[in-house]
Image (cartoon, rainbow, N blue to C red; front, side, top):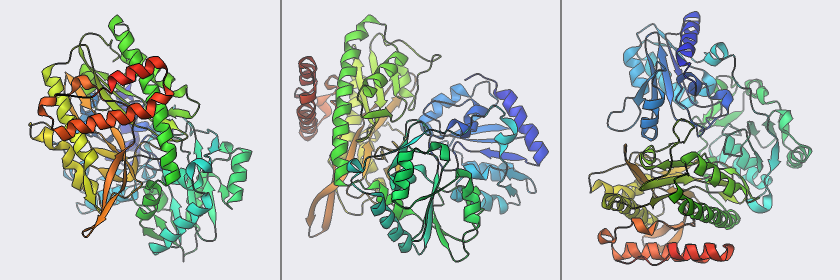
Length: 598
């Protein structure tokens, strides 16, 4: 990205002065709280220069004399580099040196001054916390300061990509069935209507998708209102095809313009009790609601997170397709690596082409995180023309990638050695894998939360005086988005219990800055194990199909059970993928899944 950020910063400070704003807080999201919003709403990246195709988690604060950008540990190295020369300094939002953004505002904005936000790009929950803590200290709060309307004349427009139907034979449930279940959840939360703002919720509820609105996630810009009497989809009409219009009519879903949602909620009858999720609904929408808002929505998020048997069967097909593409990819890497002509960017392009060669693959599920040696230590590294390096010499290649197949979403990370691995790299890799295996094999009682299991993946690293600070596991959608709630596996407490049908990643890692990174990721599905006198117990079933690098295991620090897990997993991978491989590929797979021995 061109470093014109000092000019952009000057524009913003001029607008702040004109509108009486002493400090502005700028989010990285859109009115739907999307993880990777359309370019129209990626103004914080434009302003700060802290950017990637995968999106970057960050929140900026600008005052008359300070410009700061908060981000999490996945981006520390990247942010430090990209913010150079922009006028912005990085602030850590997690880890030992974390500084809370709202606490910083309380300490640095004086009583009587005003903090401004664009309320359409902050959730109700976050904005209310900010407003309350500022008010307690005499600071005013303005939630209608759409800063980029004033300073970003070249701002891209909203995307207008066509919507298409996701085959209900693949989904395993009709829209009517989903609407009925949603209404049941709405009533259980003492409401009589719901407004869905999160795009993954809407795509799931309508069995509709679109390619291009949200990069790497086939969702479409919209809001969805549901009550027993009325269902309304707020979407730009240019996005509809005759087939989609017929699909919506079949389920009695009205269509209104995307921008009509604010007037609609303002005009709802006073007796309406409108359920909204305060973490997913924009403060700007909440401000317009003319009836009684009811905070909740966790039940609807759980409905989406639990995949039915049809979905799981189809996801198994997606995993096979993904395993075949990865086999071709890593065979190519091994074959061409000695030439010294491969680069990170070239590998990213090749991997994308191999996945998209399958007609069922609509897109990647995110831009590949493909880092050689030191770049592998940048948790969310994305190669660019400026950072691209050749894959040469000895080292570790970290490849985190996935596909959006109509049969389901994949997400996998493999770390492989090219050339000779050091004893230290093998030791560290094995510590990471020991944590991966411990999580993959745990049995746990119903009601267990991800935070109660997270330490299983970290324990071996901790015992060696090492750590990683990102989450161990995130929920994964079904041909929607790669990161899906409400469940996760991380140190932070999350009240959502793991339930059968939930798909979660298992991805411990280790990052040695300036040298190498290691991450080992599979997708796991929660399923029943057995019922005893102590209740119902659950387990994880690994769904991802691709071998780990046998050359990186240090069996001297592995238990017999851990070695057996690797061998059993590799035997399953070989059995599932071989029918789809050429004889040459099958021979390669047999070698990569040979028994691991001491």
